[in-house]
Image (tube, rainbow, N blue to C red):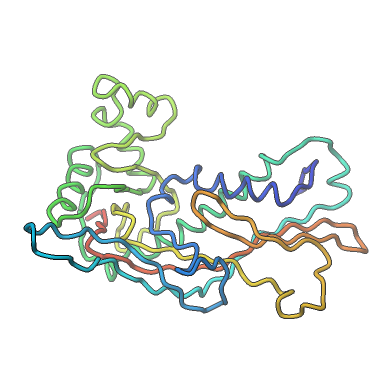
Length: 301
C-alpha cells in the first residue's frame, strides 16, 4: 500500500508518536514501566538484565517503634526483545503531496507501539503467574464482575490506587449495556460512555477494552495494580560508540517521551541510488511478573 507523507520530519513524527502512545492506551500508565536504570541510563545491551523497582506499602507502627526499612522490591527483567518500526517513502510518494501528515503518521506508530506493549504484558496474565481468578460465564456486569473483582482485591489488601481492568470485546459489550455502568442517571459523568463507547472509571478501576487480549485458560480480562506486571525498555546503543571514527550515513538520535521516560532510537537515511527515505524507530524490552498477589484474572467457566 502506498504511503502518503508530505513533510518528512522523522524525529518530530516519532516524538509525537511517543506522546500519543500513552494517551491512546491509558492502561499503559498503570503498569510498572521501567525506562531507565537506577543510575539514569536509558540505553542497554540486548539480553542484558536490568532492574525495575516496584513500590510496597509501608507498615504503620506504634510511635517509638523505630525506623523500618522500605520494602520496595527489585524485579530483574531481561531485555530479550529487539523491535523496530520501519517506514520507507519513495520519491514518487513524497513528491505526490504537499500535505503535512505529522499527526497522521504519528498515530499509527503510536498505536503499533502501544499494542506491542499491551500484547507483551498481557502474555504474562496466565494462571501459572496469577493463581487468583474470578469466574463469570457470561453477562458481565457492574454487580457480578466489577464488584466481584473489587472484593477479591480488597480481601487480599491490594492497594486501591491506580487499579486497572483490561478485557476483551465480549466483556466490553456487556459492560456498555449495563445501565449501572453507563447511565447518566447513575453518574452524570458516565454519559460520555454512551456517546463515545469508552467506559468510564467504575468501582475504582480504570477500564480499557483490548480486542487482542489472549484467551489462555478461558481468560477474558485481567484486573490489577501497576506492580502486578513489569515492562522494562531501553534504547539500543549508538553504533558510532563502537567505531568513533566512522559516521552514520544519515541521522542517528534518541527520542524520549517526557512523561514516562520511554526512549527509542531513531535513525533516518536516504538510499543514494533510489532516493527512498527511510525512517526507523527501534527499542529493546523485556517483561516480568511483579507482585502476583495484586493481579486477578477474569475467566469464563
